[in-house]
Image (cartoon, rainbow, N blue to C red):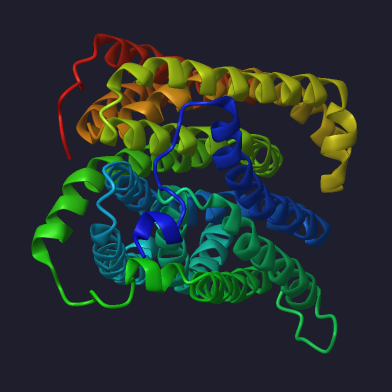
Length: 452
């Protein structure tokens, strides 16, 4: 019996139904941990405003390594999607196994960097010595979750790249439930567990990442995905495939790391403005993560579908496909923008802070909601570039946008000491700067005929 008769085709079409079939499970998979992050910050806000403020710095720092793994994942996802579109099923398992090997190596580097380099960085950059020591202690615990996170992301790349995104929600739902339980237990000392305060959130996140990886492994095993793609038969080094993955992924990894490092720089500038400004900005980070889930889902869909249909030699469908995804993404973002502005006070009240916090946060929320609209368009076109396989173009676009972002943030927050509302407008500028060259590159069709 042939492969095609026993398994559904891995080739996609460009219909709205296909777009939603891929993107909505991804959105749910992204949304669940973002709910988890929001609840985590509610717990930290209940602990103290200082804990909420520190959560912003540590969260963004860990995100640097998280997006390093996500960059590897996106590059690998484009390769897997291309092989699926080309119907070269035998190579998918090889790409997966070599991606796992790379992710383990990157995790080891991240742990070493956190232990031996990070303390000096934060002791130099943060004005408050006590806050710096607390951040360092937290990160030395939290970083041990990185290997599990990176391998989990590789498994996600496999599921999305092979058009099986519906299984993503199982692992992320497990991770969220476990994290919420252990956050509550370890931060405050419930159910017989010790009260660890801020560090309890670090241990809770590690336990959740381990459980999320374990559950998604069970899904892959019992759905016979591992057997179909022979995922566990290629764990010897294959340098040609490792080189292929790194050539495709390294520019995206650098792109994401530059982006999040700049965000960490932004938070360090905010820290100079005081604890409340930092707490407000941490809440805004939650909003970007939570309400941006649908945008990132459509962006991942843009990446995988563009790569897949190019693999089918349907280059003429790329621009109509991206336009269709943009319409869906913008529609969701517009709905979110309206809801955020109507229910700004009820939403911000969940952090349990005082009236001063609310007065400072609401104007920033208005700016963030507008930035989400631009993000909903720019992220789709930028990930369309990723799907064409031209990841060096992504890096160049990101580099220019980050220079503009950092210059604006420094001048408005640090040099001129404008209100942080003005500083947060850097997000609007950033997404516009990403959109223009991404749109131009796709429209130019310079990517047509190039293979990965």
